[in-house]
Length: 215
Ligand SMILES: C[S@@+](CC[C@H](N)C(=O)[O-])C[C@H]1O[C@@H](n2cnc3c(N)ncnc32)[C@H](O)[C@@H]1O
Ligand SMILES: Nc1nc2[nH]cc(C(=O)O)c2c(=O)[nH]1
Ligand code: SF4
Ligand SMILES: [Mg+2]
Image 1 (cartoon, rainbow, N blue to C red):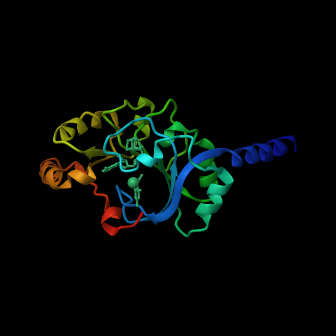
Image 2 (cartoon, helix red, strand yellow):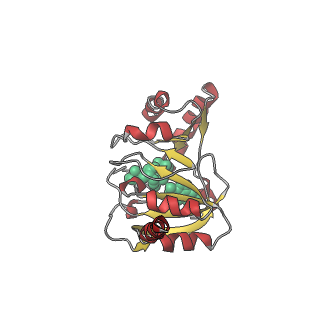
Image 3 (cartoon, protein in one colour):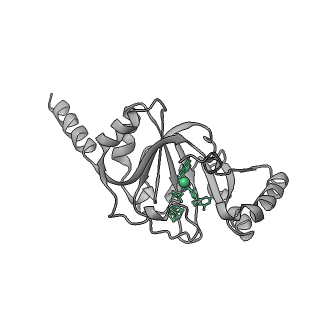
């Protein structure tokens, strides 16, 4: 009885936990292994990594976005039939993702994250971790054993060589993807195609949602 009361209290507290949310939307995962699958995206505000080619710079401020609770986010996601929730940003690891991911999994969702790995702590319970390291800020090495897919954005030919510096840190089963920076496709695609043909452990990820003109 005592412990039951305590459990209810901790769930109420968890469901009241708050996040800054730039936007949330039901769409098709455009990138990586789950490309083509329906998913609910939650884009949290806040990022201090500073990628000059970032396609969502509006997400960078941490304190200008509407605040939502775990309960509100789970309810919104539950309004759609898809059972994957992708937590992205901004840099989602700026926040404690344990309350949100715990509640989402309890509600029957798969929890996926898009992250640069930059954060003091690696929080959350994950079914799929997409790790996209950046030259502009070192990731927290605690993420390495959790990585399911490495996704390196290729802006310059030197990024192809740099991509290979990450692979030996990651689980043997992880997928290795190169994704052309959106504005550099004409120059980077031929190089990536050539590289993957010669190094078939690697795969290409393109931002298919942008071709489909969906969020
Ligand atoms: C906007 S970020 C948010 C999540 C996290 N901050 C990160 O960088 O992984 C989501 C994904 O988009 C990629 N991305 C951002 N801008 C891009 C661009 N201009 N071209 C290609 N990929 C891009 C990131 O590398 C990341 O894999
Ligand atoms: N459709 C769609 N797929 C995505 N995959 C990763 C995205 C992201 O911005 O994290 C993204 C996005 O913004 N839209
Ligand atoms: S880490 Fe992600 S959100 Fe932050 S600037 Fe880079 S691409 Fe954008
Ligand atoms: Mg995006």
